[in-house]
Length: 81
Image (tube, rainbow, N blue to C red; front, top):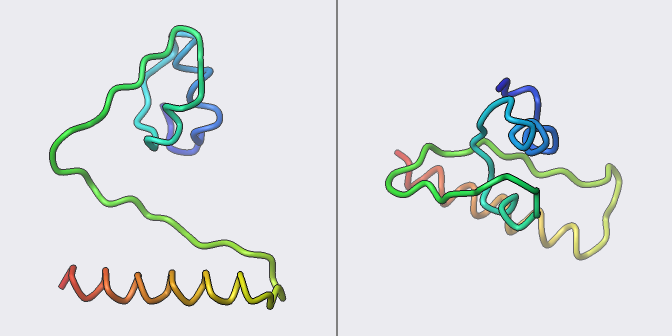
């Protein structure tokens, strides 16, 4: 299954018997007939993620969330060296 298919497309493809997928754990909460989600134990590869928010949104909640996310990224980057 192609990475480009995205998670919202992978579950129906798996249900149709057209492949298997590695998906975020959160997707296991979505019911899909005939699809079984199994946890992957042990060391796992890091996932590339991005923070998205509406351009120009300067609300306190958004500013605080972005600040916390950036701080966590700095901490993560420091631990990965």
